[in-house]
Length: 288
Ligand SMILES: Nc1ncnc2c1ncn2[C@@H]1O[C@H](COP(=O)(O)OP(=O)(O)O)[C@@H](O)[C@H]1O
Ligand SMILES: [Mg+2]
Image (cartoon, rainbow, N blue to C red; front, side):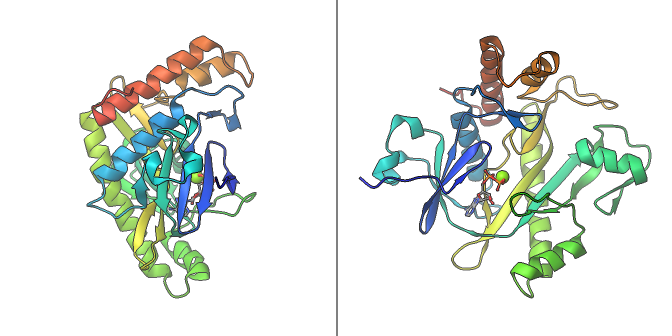
């Protein structure tokens, strides 16, 4: 049997190269305050992988995406083991466009900080008197570069994005930036509207796109999980202060009171329940 080693091991996910496709494994690792904790959250990887799958299905008519299969039978024999079940996605390998396509429907985090300084977010002028976490008049596209390892992502305007993309895809900067903005906003509208009916606010999120074998712009990566989006419970939402994090609030509260890189079982259990709750609310299916 051929053995595989990941060519990339991120904070949370591991990637395997299968020539024309990729395998993405969502592990149970969790990060909080930018560190990976020693303890894992059992089932987190499977829940997030299935959540991403739900959204990729939900949006496939809006934008083509990279998903091929989550069925282990479609994967090389090496992966046909319980440890990969439910947490693994086989995807088309894309030529990635190195832009983080961030969409914000609410003002929070770094956008809130930037707005407080000069009323702008990534060069976009916003109405005055917005309060922290307030809903924006309309969602905004605030891209950043996807920087090589070790360098920081940088917020960019549409024009800077064009120049950045032209370095990788000569002459395509404007066309691609326009498409990325349009598709990202379409995806956000569709998914955030739906999530709201299920009691979850998607405050902001990030998409990544690449080109498929025909040069078609295709949605890649994981989408709309609490690891790349801010989910807030609709119940209790209130402007004027930060909102609780849907999934990591128990972890953050605990770590603030007890700085550490491990978690007590009680916090782990409560956190698993939050992931299951989010999965149920969004998909309508109990996670089992
Ligand atoms: N279909 C795909 N084809 C090629 N690369 C992909 C695809 N989907 C996601 N990626 C890339 O896989 C990587 C996932 O790694 P991740 O753990 O998120 O680390 P990081 O985002 O820091 O690079 C990202 O670089 C992303 O751009
Ligand atoms: Mg990533």
